[in-house]
Image 1 (tube, rainbow, N blue to C red):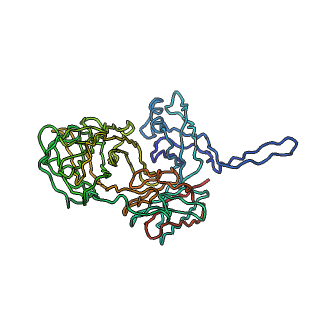
Image 2 (cartoon, one colour):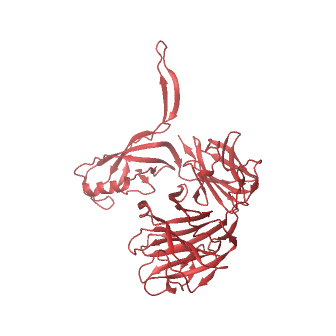
Image 3 (cartoon, one colour):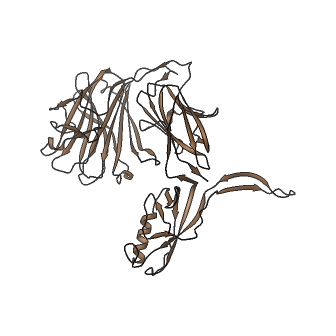
Length: 496
């Protein structure tokens, strides 16, 4: 039976691996030095270097082939689409249960007359990562703060750690033996410990309990606002709020607004909103989260807008309002062009007020099916100094707003959650509860990424700790502090 190849899980039905192809493995390279006056050489090192090889592929191109006879240009066009990637992709021989992470080089040399001929094209494969990875991943859950990993491959392999906090904590550590460990946070017992950023509102849009529908609006937001009076509904998954399009009508921007109070008034605060954007369906959309002061006047807006019904070019806009309702834009960031082709992604926007300094940070997030990686990308941050103290009123509540424009197509926008914390004065060298109950920590030892609730947390990595792999065979991992985290370890068997 002829073997074929899969590139990122896809194949060409008329393309086969030439018989006799030899699979390269065990790509170790020995480096030595010659010494004058001494027989032989001196060993320097042994390691796995990048590896390059030719992959001969047979093109089946006659009346019996898939899609019939194809011209030279048809064949070339399909091959270019199949192999044209800027990054390493999964290259699998269909008969095998492993894959390489491979790059492809040209040129493709194809016979001028391809019809009814035996055509062999040689693809140059570059392996900057010279290992093979099992198609199926493995995972194990820690029991009593210990996780067992059994790597059935022939080489050590990186792991992915996912830990859900069962209570607040000032650090998280996972260790292998006495020397290898990875840690975020601070476990110095000589420093005072307190939660300096307590939650005053957390809602993950699972129900409308506690939310009050608004039928009027007493301020003007020309950036991400509009008329109110419509309603939200829950998505089919019951995990987000969405605009009920049938509840609004009329020209211009019309939408729905729901409001909720904080558990207490706050001076310094940080608030984060999480939304999902479905760009596959082109359309216009507006979203905003409004923050209100103790006099029930809006003081800030955190918004996202895609004003063109036929394009997917979203922009994040954050503004402040003085006591007279005058609006000032302090942050405006258009999505990176690399996002325009994505069908969907998650947007995080965070606004922090500390004294008279406002900090806005935004980032995008997408989760790819395992064993692909969770990715946080398109991060952007900016500060604004309130030199005149125009925006210093205490905050007490927020509202969520989503709108469509007239009869134009609507881009799906999902409100996944909003999280607001009071920021308390923190003494020098004090330990903070940087990890809150319910937080999800993700540590990817391969890509060297650390995420907490889908936000990059590399800045909290403890000095002296490092990323590590697990050896072939059995490895025992230990989690600290004990009894605080529910940890799962994921890995793929890796082969030389």
